[in-house]
Image (cartoon, rainbow, N blue to C red; front, side, top):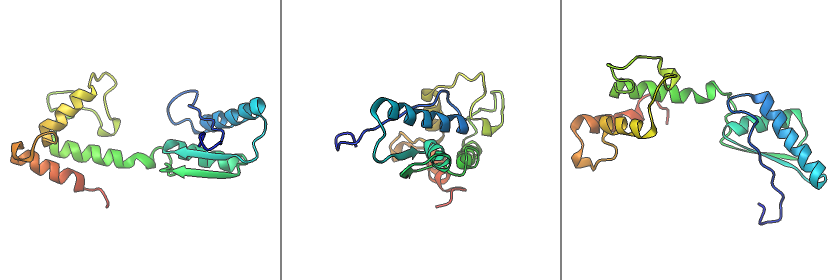
Length: 159
């Protein structure tokens, strides 16, 4: 867009999480700052991706924009928009039973991780490998790993 001669203003939000109203205000504050610094643009488009799509759609309802482009916008809201992750988490645990392991403190699967967890991305990938053999050649997987790898993606996930 910039190479084509359009100005582009992008922001992060003052804090992470799902503070929708705060993020809408931050987006509008960015537009005001841009206008104060560079002057009023002829046309203003608002773009939002993923969670930013929710912010952009709500900002467009509250403030006037010439157009809005939403790409993969989470428009159902933070809770309903991510329920599929809980579904996948429960399915994974049903098949794999290793996140958490039976010997580890148990916690609700919707949580993702316990607050005191020391799990790293590397550790999580190791558990996925243990359960599914996803990084192994097919001929090197156990029958159980192959079944898990085949079954997990298709269970409970609508096509």
